[in-house]
Length: 190
Image: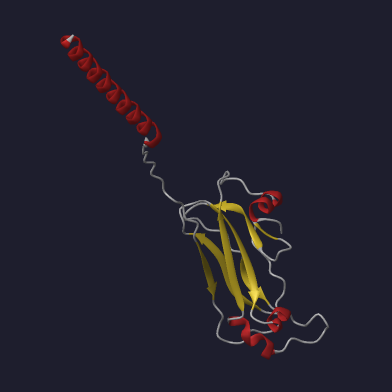
């Protein structure tokens, strides 16, 4: 019986060892399942929508005459790395100046909407430019009430028109102009 006791003891040790190994294996598998991780690297480049206003303003130094015009060429250049859509707003420094300037005559491809912005309907590729929004500022001879425009009202023409522009990235076909509906969807309602 003494051998039987040793054999039972050995069997218990073997069984206990197998149970410990099985428990350790189950714990390892469970931990591996719950804590497994993996890593994937996906490099990407962020696009930039950047624009620059290019404005040529060349008054002759004298105060312009009523009914005359002052050369002022306004265009926008895409200096970013994405094709973009561009809109521009022309603002007056004060109400007096707005009253002596005729409505702006815009270049082809520019449409003014009720929000006051002029929208360039063609997408502009990186490094590209809009055609000029305006090429001159025409001055009124008289106010809407029939009174003459005075020279003192025209003195601010050189610095009184502010050009403000915005751009958004565009992923459509850069060769096709955008419709008013497309512009409204991309920029938000006018």
